[in-house]
Structures are given as C-alpha cells and as structure tokens.
Length: 214
Image 1: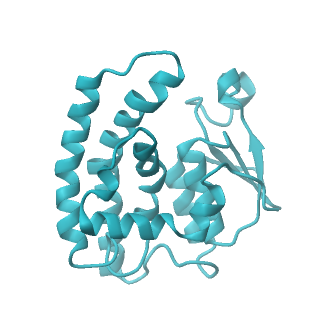
Image 2: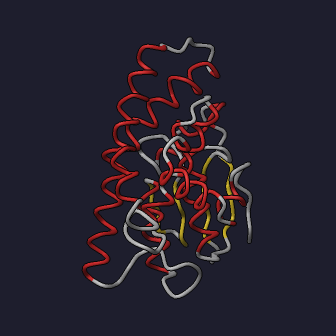
C-alpha cells in the first residue's frame, strides 16, 4: 500500500517529511488538510492526530504523527534505498543523535518563534513585535556561531555525510530568509552547509509545496 501523508502543502513540518520521502525515493500520496479552514481540528482528524496539527502519516493503517518521528520511521523502514540518512555504526549513530538533538534544542525553538513573529503573525493580520523578533535572532546568531565552528571541521553536523539532522533545519531556515533575515548565510561555514543542503533535489521538489508522487 502507498504511504499517505496528510498535511498542508506549504507547512514546514509537512515539507520536512515530504523531503525525506523524496530522499528515500518512496512514492507517496499527499492528502491535503486545509489548516486555513481548521480541518486539522475536526473530530475525524483528531482521531489520527490528537494535537490537531499537521502532518501525520498513514502506512496501511499504522498512524504516526510528529514530523521528526515520521522522518526517522521512513529512513529506517527504507534504509536500503535512496540516501542513507541514519548511520549504522554505533559511534556515528551517536554523533547523529547529538546533531539531531542540537537542531531541536539550539536551532528549532528560536528559528520557529522568529518565523512566527515575522512571517506568520503578519499573515494572520497581527503585528510583529520587533523587540521579541530581534531578541530571538540575537540568540540564534550566537548558536550559529557554534554551528560555524563545528562546520569548519566537517561537511555536515554529524560528520562528513548528510543525515536527517541536517535536513531538519531546512524548512524554518528557509523561512527565516522569507522574513528578511540573512542569518543562515552570514557565517561562511553555515552558509556553505545551508546552501548545499537546500540545493538537494529532495528539497527543490517540495520547497514550493508538497504533491503526490505515487
């Protein structure tokens, strides 16, 4: 049975999952959920995703939500096809987990809140609190100073091979640029790394919206 990805075509987390499906050459059916109409809060949707956000994956009745969990599942289930995104060597796997934790702890929280403040709030008719936004960027900038040091010694966050940990950064990293920030390209090693991962065909396939491939 073809995997079914339920989500909003331009949501950051939906595109994160779709990108990994492309990296692993896994055909999938995209099932649109219109979050602008609140479809993610309807009872039938909440039965699948109790938190009422997107996306979730349906693999022949096996339901999984949370984008990073879905990405891990895809990378493990289809380990023998497409791009290897999770190392198997114990030490390399530990470094991958370290990098994935770094993304969640030191990047995503700040980047997501900055994007909400500068991009999503104006979309909803609310004003950006520039003091909050600039504070978030300042904190993120200090985190990316550390990224720049790490990336001065290796090609990717977990070593010299791309992993899920790198790809997880793309959706919100790109949206920071949409909000007018050059933070992802202002440091030489971060710039080299971020431009390289964004140039991958898998991201190029979903950057303008998710579509079925099955």
